[in-house]
Image (cartoon, rainbow, N blue to C red; front, side, top):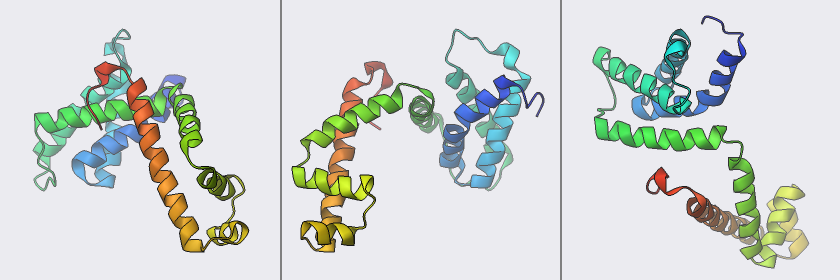
Length: 186
């Protein structure tokens, strides 16, 4: 890849490789093909970086290259696993854009952490205590059970339910804070 040591090259690779891989993996079902297509996106992006319009979202430009490469892949691959049409690619583009925000937006993780803290406050004292022992003190379920006077499977159940509750709560909080232009639910 030309100019592979340049900061521009490293930045586009580091910031976009994960969501592009997920994009191609969802579309092809083949990790090896996905990785090859990701490399081709980066190669084409570097070759045509002069065509990029900085007033437009960079991720959308990369997704345009990715979409073109995906269509080219399906035309040349007689054994394509997933028949794909424009509507499906539009949905894939939407999910890739959301993944890009989560992976690149420097405000996403602090926002997610703030939502998690608020959601933790809604858990029962017992559930918070058990989660603290599990994740902060790194105790096993057996150690926690002995400490709080519960059976190991009951501790595992509390942890499982608390994690599901937190996941749903954080998801709702993030969705309510998301801009309306982002579209519908994931």
